[in-house]
Image (cartoon, rainbow, N blue to C red; front, side, top):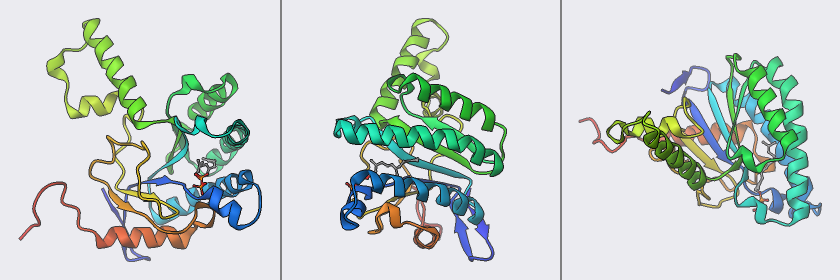
Length: 244
Ligand code: FPP
């Protein structure tokens, strides 16, 4: 359900999902190593969490590392993991001072033990916070998430705790990593690319898409407001017809 922000005169989407693309191109344009693009991008994530909440967004989901990102060079994967490890540790303090709840989605079994422990701690200590719900997709792939959900559904049918007749769209949503989180209203992918890249395929079925040219490290509050304005110009019908 959208909120209305009087000051901006805009309907604010409850849940915004972001594919943070363009870190590498930003680094190239600034003649610095790729890793500096990712670290500049991680600083933008921190700021956008605050800006998003201040304008009235309740849920923000970001694609931090996909199941396909392991194919990058070992140097880049190592640097991204180090960045994420430090970010998650640091997030514990910041989340509590900002009243932010943090949830990590994705296949945790593919992450190193210390990162999994940090995630468990971060989720546990922030679970009662009532400000922004910040969802980090880490070792996340939409098809992998659906596959894991289907295996769980199959296992529950086999052990007798679930009947095939009880499978509904809501039940499938409840078996996904995003259970309890409303579907995104707006998806932003920066850097002008227009692909989903295996991000939230089930959850984005009725979401509005926006593809600004800006590279992720240059994204800021003005760009976020521009995205919300674009969202306001769209008419959402969810498959129905416009009211006469
Ligand atoms: C895409 O840029 C970005 C990523 C693969 C990683 C996104 C990660 C961050 C922004 C930093 C860490 C995240 C958090 C939550 C702290 P790209 O490298 O594909 O850019 P390019 O297409 O220009 O090469």
